[in-house]
Image: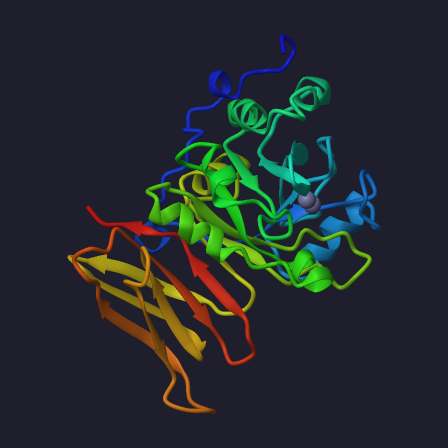
Amino acid sequence: MGSVPSFKTMNPWPAQPQATNPFLTRGEWLKAALHVHTTASDGKVSPREALEAYRRLGYDVVALTDHDRVTLADPPEGLTLLTGAEWAAAVPDSPAGFHFVTIGIGPVEAAPIAALHNRPAKMAALLRTLCPLVIVAHPYWSALTTELLASLGPAGALEVYNHGCELEDALGYSHYAWDQLLARGHHWLGLAVDDSHWSTPDHGGAWVMIKSPDRSPASILAALASGCFYSSTGPAIESFCLSNRTVTLRCSAAASILFRCNGSLGTGLHRPGPGESLTFAEHLLPARARFVRAEVTDSAGGKAWTNPIYLA
Ligand SMILES: [Zn+2]
Ligand SMILES: [Zn+2]
């Protein structure tokens, strides 16, 4: 591993993410695609074409995350490019094993990472020294158990939604795994991504809204690493706050607003009837609630997910 630079020696922010509430933080909202493939691995469009397509869709930030390599490209005007890559590790009984999406990874040699192919926890630990955010990709599609995910450590990040996996195999939603980790006290972040390969309409379906003080890669990576974002496939979330044990949320027109806690301690609020909508929800959490995260669903089936807020 001698030639792999250490992230911790180069960067000031922590590799272990702790959720920061983006709705209580100053900055601008930036729309981001954080899992994108190109012809540099198994995607069907060039890096430049991928970046231009996302810019046309109004995105502000893209991470190119090709397999086993860091793809470099010149981003079009107005788009911030984050470095990225996706790395595979084997797991017995899982056809796909772990796929780790690394965001903000520096120039690295693939060989020392690939050498840990059969030791996923060691690979994850190495990757966390090389970049500010390591995301476990598509847990449902990879058939990853909660125990396997928890073996990676008490703090991490996973894809709560992977658009490509949903389009191709209806295995895109991984909220069950996320809630299991949170209920066991693991402070994991959740992100929605495209995992675009461009052979199906798999780009522009899921994104992350990051609250960042500016558009520099350093600021955006710091915001991501601290959990200062929410994710969406449609709805916009305007506020999500906890005061004592009362949680409130404001959003664009929704069919339902769910507050999810450990076990069944959360609740669901639904529009009164078809054609009507909700834009606000408030709920007094039970004393045994240890975290709360929100999930908004609109009338078209689009969803948005906040990161958890933890109760003392
Ligand atoms: Zn993958
Ligand atoms: Zn991928």
